[in-house]
Length: 308
Image 1 (cartoon, rainbow, N blue to C red):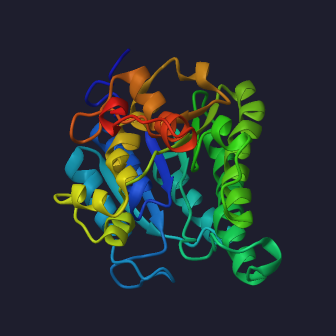
Image 2 (image 1 turned 30 degrees about the horizontal axis):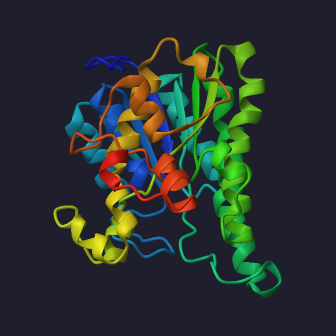
């Protein structure tokens, strides 16, 4: 077990695609806390909101990165536009001549899937839009950024999904389009893990557990300070975690000189915590996917505290 030292990422350059909120924002912040320069991209700025209509902005993320000790740089980008993504990468190349970490956390498809509809009853155009936002964006970003990342050995690609590969393999994620999107992202990391090693690169997929994102807090009608009130609405909310947890784990992975041993792996926030000794913001180490399997899936009677 090891923890990353402060400034261990000084001189490193990261692109966190989809850093406006949630896990992407905290991955950016925690990389900044280790001294990295982080380019935070997304669609929502202080001047223009995306179709989601959320208030969080990429400028806020960049400010948080800088406040944490790194250098945060916000760039508005719709990752469905390959030319715009190429412009982002060209700017990074021009300003630094290197890219050490690529995090693909682009999602932007909340509200575009229906848990209670079969494929043939669902809205086809909405489902196809979800797949474009969740899959095409990652492909566009990797296609543009990897030539810069492989210029120097040691590059890291992190694909952010929902659920580990093992968990998702034999489970249907309730919606055809959602299931396909999340499985595709995990598989992209595996595919890249076959292509990057000859250039000294590593690719992994990561997943949070029950993520207490800004959107999820709003859904439960709570704040981070009052989040436990949400347990009355859903008892499994007791196993929720903040985006800080995955952010710290990914930052520790990025700072690990021996991270290539994880090439091709699918890692949860709890897996990263066990490896690197990081904790959530409250000092706990929730293992939601083990809880999901043991308690929710198998009907085991066990308190959430046993899995934190």
